[in-house]
Amino acid sequence: MEIDDIYARYRPNVGVTLFNRRGEVFLGRRVGDFADVGEVKGEFRWQMPQGGIDAGEAPDEAAFRELKEETGVSSAQLLTVTPGWLAYDFPPDYPKKKWAGQRQKWAAMLFLGDDAEVDLEADDHQEFDAWRWAPLEDAPNLIVPFKRRVYEQMVRAFAPLRDFIAGLS
Image (cartoon, rainbow, N blue to C red; front, side, top):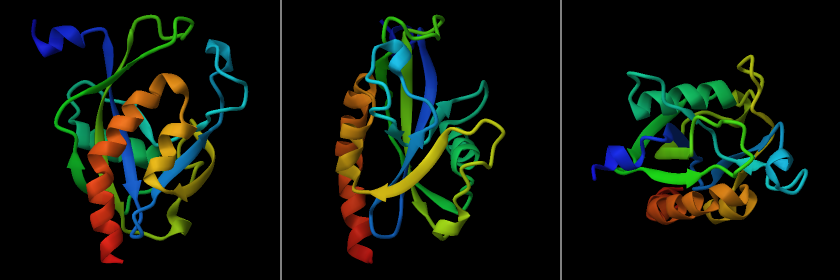
């Protein structure tokens, strides 16, 4: 069976791990929560920018677009993109019935601007209501449980890169 067949029911998506020069990562607090699909109301709202990959769009192009839409940030340099897909299933009550879950490519980027560039209201669909810089390893414990395994995989993939970035400052 081809890998594309396995992921046919998984929405193509990109996640962005935005590092600052200290090796910390951007985390945004979602405007809404996942209480409607069985998660604890108000909990696990922190995540990294992410979104769908449009038809004909390359994952790195989608990463820059999603980063700009969700954070206002355009001063970033692409460092790498995960070579394969990382996938998670949606909870049974999740409203996107067309998809079983999402398959993601993760883009590691270095933030070249300053914090004043962050504008959570940059797009007409605001994704986050607060943001912060945090250690990379904090991310999996702050994300909704159904996405946690993918975040753990992303942390393992990007930890050496984080160490390199932090060593430069």
